[in-house]
Amino acid sequence: MTEPQPRRRDEVAATADLVAHLVDVLSRPAQGTHRMIAGHVFRVLGPAAAPVRVVHDAIADASYAGVRSGARVVARVVGAGSSLLPPERTSHALTSTAAGSVVVGAVNGLFGDQLRHDGNHLAVQLGPHHQRRVVGAETALLARAHPEPTGHVVVFAHGLGETEQAWWYRHDGRGSHGQALAELGATPVVLRYNTGRPVADNGRELARLLADLLRAWPVPVERIDLVGHSMGGLVLREACSRAVARKWLPLVRTATYLGTPHDGAPLARGAARLATLLRWRPESRPWAEVLDLRSAGILDLERAHRLPLAPGVRHVAVAATLAADPSAWWAGAVGDGLVTVSSAKHTVPETHVVPATGHLALLTEPRVTQILAGLITWEPPAALAR
Image 1 (cartoon, rainbow, N blue to C red):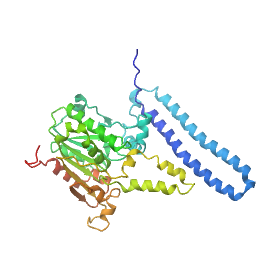
Image 2: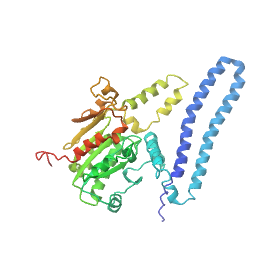
Image 3: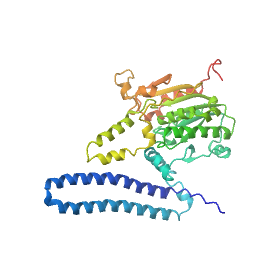
């Protein structure tokens, strides 16, 4: 019996399917709002306008249905056409470009759980990435991506809606945190993961991935340091709590959380409140239903995370505030624009506050690089060494 062949990766067809899905999702609340507003107008006009209303509603409904059907037809045509192209032209048509990779990261943040459920090829696969492609946990592949590996590995996990390219955000030629740490003898491993999935699911898979990475690394691993930006810090906490982490956790010396919302993110909570407000009026209620489609990853950012910090590791929070003076009365509340200082600190025993800095600036801020450099060269006192 012949084994079924796996479906080849096709980002062209996947993009077309995604656009058709977005047209479907966005056209429905637009249609509902249109009908509600038209209903108000026709009620004012009275019974005499009833025949006109019937015609209007029929034409409007047919138009919206036609737009959705047209988008699905176009998606099928594009999919059929892309299947005729060589695989190398379609497998990474979007993610092979810098702009496309950024778009895919954002889309996964919004709908990543749905993309995975639908089997859409734009759903990000967890793993270390090199040149915008996932690197398998095999020695030969890792050696190719890291031609000069060391036994000191620093794992970088990005935040919601980001990809590994976020670590080069507005670096102004300075390079990334990872590049700076490489000069100190460490090997940076930058992850990409589907930020629309639940934090717990990503943490569980990351714990297994790091176990596989430890086994396949080209040279013996002697030390691991963890760095997470925003949601990435929560994923690292989850990974450290899994049973399989026992295979690599003894090698972890530090875990640094850059702008991580340990106590929840105000913006994520604001989206939930906005959805509640939109439900109050019939005209806006369809848009509340759109907000309710936000990914599981975004929903996770609404709540506090109570997992205990992994023992035997130096945990460090790096919080930022837009205020030039971190002691200003408003500095803690505004935080980095997305995460408050108190949420970034939460129960982490050691905290550094970086003033005049926004949430995304933490990704390449030189002062953060200095903090990381100090941490990865730190050795625990002999009494605490494992």
